[in-house]
Amino acid sequence: MMPGMYPEQDVTMLSIQTNIASLTAQQNLNTNNTFMNQTITQLTSGYRINSSSDDAAGLVVANQYRSSVAELTQGVRNANDGVSQLQIIDGGLSNISTILDRLKTLATESASDTFTGSRTTLNNEYQDLIGEINRQADNIGLGTTTSTNAKKLNVYIGGNTAGVSVDLSKGAVDAATLGISTAIDTALNAGTAIGEVNAAVSALGVVQGTVGSSENKLSYATNLANSQITSYSSAEGQIRDADMAKEAANLTKGQVLQQASLAAMAQANAEPQAVLSLLKG
Figure 1 (cartoon, rainbow, N blue to C red):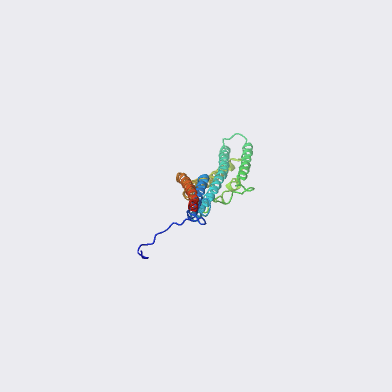
Figure 2 (cartoon, rainbow, N blue to C red):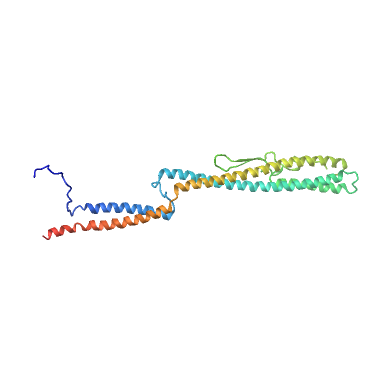
């Protein structure tokens, strides 16, 4: 037969030095072991991404979402702290409003010419209550001695806005600021005091309105932040979390491939034994 008449055919060579089948089986076994280890890591951690090599681009996006969640979570705490502080102020303002009601009663009683009691006694109570207004104003940080809250407060929440502004810069509610100064000692002075108390009630109402609206703004901001936390957490989970059903199926697949690779490698390692049958003659 002349050369070139038939196409060349692959011939499997028996070799002891180089066992190609065994090397191939070892390579596939290593690949399957890597797959198994990755699957087990994802199943036990619950995360699809456990290192940068798993999904570098996805990890960057997931970290951004997680950072936003951390910022907003603290922002919600800030807002809740702000609401608590405003509620304390609100409670103090309500007390002062009640005191103003009593001042109005005393002034009205003394303003009548038919009053037959002691205006000195009325005035003493009136002055004591003015002192109590000052004490409570200081207690909530809106007085003359203590005015820590009588300023523009910013509650940082995060997200796309810097925060919620609470402007109490004109929120002092001490007696002098409210305009209460006249004494219940004469009917004439009592009439003047009634006008002052009326003006004070209006001025106090403005501060109460500011505090109340600020509480509402913080509540709305908290609701938005909580909604964003949920959305960002969901988006992060879609990227970072493992699909447990899928990974459980992969574990079964990996186990079967691993067993098949081990069996194939055992068979491949036994092939050089066939050379002995040739040497036995």
